[in-house]
Length: 483
Ligand code: NAD
Image (cartoon, rainbow, N blue to C red; front, top):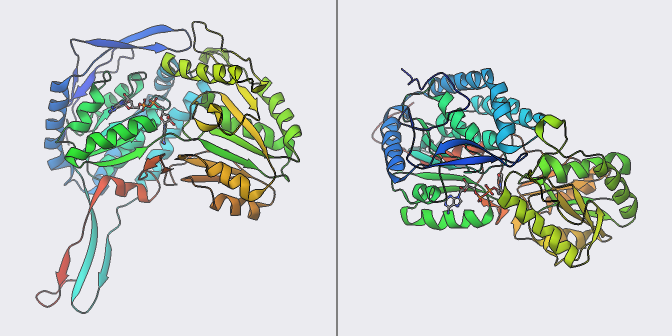
């Protein structure tokens, strides 16, 4: 393999990467540093020609890459892991600027990505064999072709590499589209990859709202792996139908957390709060509704309020625990939940009843005490640091309440009686259920949503199959003998 060389990395210059080469564009846009409201660097806006060229390069590269033995593919992916690790401090700094997250959360992402590499590097594609008197039946998994990866802004590195790694390992080529809000780290990840892989194997095109539909409509793309909102997921599925692309949809959630009466209140309260406010609530599996048994409701809420008051909100360099909302559009959406809560007279247990409008998009973590079931804050995903609590008394009823959502991504159950917690967990309609922990997705477990939270899943042992066709050679024993 003779990899293409882009250049020595410059951390303040950004291009798309098409066919192994940096590509600019006539039109440019910029991300915004959400902690300061200041514009960041120029990035090119890819157009239809760029997408067409990327697809041609990816199809050409696929012919050879799909024939490279899996062990060799793993070796190169391992090199990307090391190459990324050698640049992880620069990546952390860039991630802090484009997302505004505190350094410890950015590092969790830039260092944590090694776990995603390691997990996948330990996997292999299964080959299953069954035999009867007449025939041998094999089940093999083969790559699909060109994958389009459409990514959100909340964890730009993990969520793009979480698609790049399994796509490449299974022998596909991939074109990544970062969110227009956070293009910078993804452009650099793919730039680094050019030092390892031949042109066309991993490419990146960033741009504006017109770009995603160019990928979903393109007949040369075999699969779209999408992570983002439910509303966009529906559009993507519809747009992929005319070309019958495979789709994996990792979408939004409205995760319920059910707290049993026997928990240790002092220990559990900070964990519940962290589940809701991790990364300022901008996590698909952040806890979005908390159901606390009525016997401990007041005491638990009091402890949660006390812990929430200790959470400092600020810029990455301020040493804060929570950063800003990543972009103005999302900030306005979160602000609307505050307006709705105030207008309806629901009770703020902690947090200001309106969001201060400043240069950075900061929102104080806020708990709403027992709003009604039909309130927006119970029904919808705010994707910000505002969470409702409600009391419960009857197990059957609270399970129904938790499941009364079109979303089904994650859920938590907390209790000393682990058997009871597990029993409840089994009945929750969600792809990932956590007992005595807030939602912590791991590359070892397949991740996917029930109901409107998605279609299919990635990661875990099964996740590789999302990047494969299944092929079943049937060998008739009457005419040939095989071993
Ligand atoms: P979004 O749906 O607005 O955008 C996601 C991506 O889709 C972006 O790259 C965007 O440019 C692109 N896009 C938008 N319209 C498109 C179209 N018509 N065709 C093709 N692409 C299009 O989501 P977001 O605001 O970036 O992310 C937040 C949402 O993502 C939340 O709902 C969150 O729960 C969800 N999310 C889910 C997971 C998961 O794994 N299930 C993980 C992270 C975030």
